Length: 119
Image (tube, rainbow, N blue to C red; front, side, top):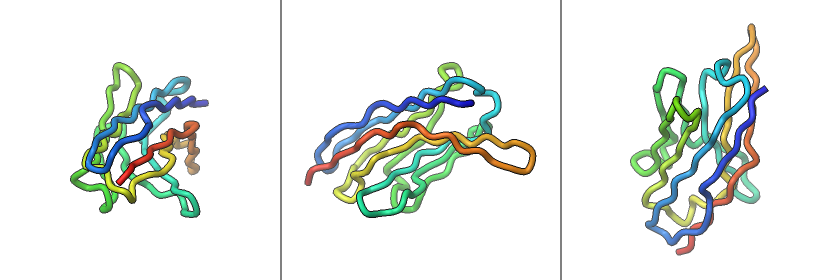
């Protein structure tokens, strides 16, 4: 089992910045990637950014150049630095941990943190 606890959401004006954090606990050594997803009202959950255990990172086109995912292995924490926030960025942001097991992949989720952007 993996437990994920997010923090850092809140309200910000358009153009501002927020930094989200996700602290992992439990079977941390079994995680092979961690991601950030977001879900706005009435929309499907979408992948925002991901980072592998080896440090390889990627992000969605909609946030490239504005959002940066990083990790601190010593703290078992993944971060999402969000700059130049836009009115289309508000959503509940979820931390995700991917754990492979044989031919399957298990997904663990945090409780979500709300991000609100005012124009």
